[in-house]
Length: 480
Image 1 (cartoon, rainbow, N blue to C red):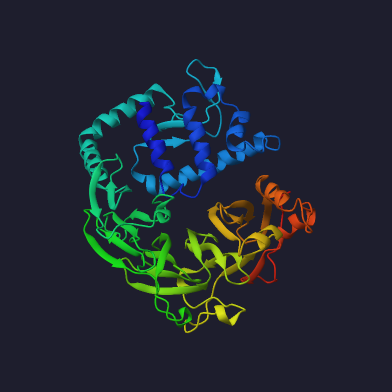
Image 2 (cartoon, one colour; image 1 turned 60 degrees about the horizontal axis):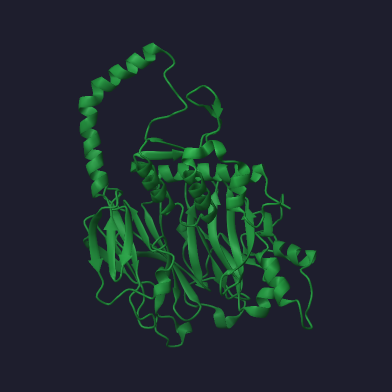
């Protein structure tokens, strides 16, 4: 297969929304694709060196196998959603397959045309002749449908980029379809510093087979303008725009300037059409809003939180076929990192806060499905005003996130993993970064001390404000 086409497909996956928050899996896919032509020399030790350069002594082949399995499922999810129309599939074989000369060859990664399988073949020459006959019989009809599909893909918005103050929309082949210029400018720079992964969405909002583009536009001049969610048609016509936030008495006269930090679209169900989820926070103060919009940009309902919820992931947590909203960020409740889970049918009210000065009034009582607070280390309390929960992912019943104990620059991360019932199964410092920062800060002065086992164990004390039968999240099957 043409290597350039394979590289384009890998880059398309790496730049997709599905992989936007999967830094470790992105790195693994890059390693595998770079060694696609020399797989016989790729060993688990080499993969460990690439993925965990600071933890090579503690990582084993089993850790590589676990990451390979995670990547395999992530690729399957990508091809079931964003990659439905991709002509080339990237797969990770489950077992060794024979090489052409009959010797066993362990293949880490395979690129193949959509619908083909290198692990299967006709069981006899009769099957082969029958397959050839079928292909010939349907060719006249199939080629017409194929051409129609190819033309549709070439016309369909697939990705976007910012060129100064201009949004450029591209198809799957990287060809420009249309562009929009913003005379007021786009900014600030840090708002788009991570690219457009959390600021743009492509998909069929109305169920009519047309691809809409949702773009979060932040005008230059952060102190005077809110961001805006703009919906474009597949041809670039603006359909509607929506502004987050509202005037609140708690803002004491400050302008209602809100910035959108996270964007997602809930899948349609038998009883509910698609809904747009928008998480926005006040540009200066603490209130944040999780809004639910219909496909025409009309506000359906809203949830208010005392603190900033800057990342969301939509996932079916309980296997009932309906997605929940999982949001992470910071709570004003003791300035702790937080995770909030909302049922899309109950997105309303305001989070309860123990301090009256941070309570949002007039919204009613919220009904979060789950609301967690993560402990702050002594290092965090000494240097920063809060810690922050980031990078939520949900994969096959496991919920993972990290908590940054160092805020500027973000780092000193603690890794958390929960099962589908939100029992804590892992809480640990992901590398030596936290231990090193702790050691440097407490190496002198009256508070000098080394990081103790008790301090590390304290990370298991995840407080549950809503959704648990006890004050703290149950600990079950905790990893060492």
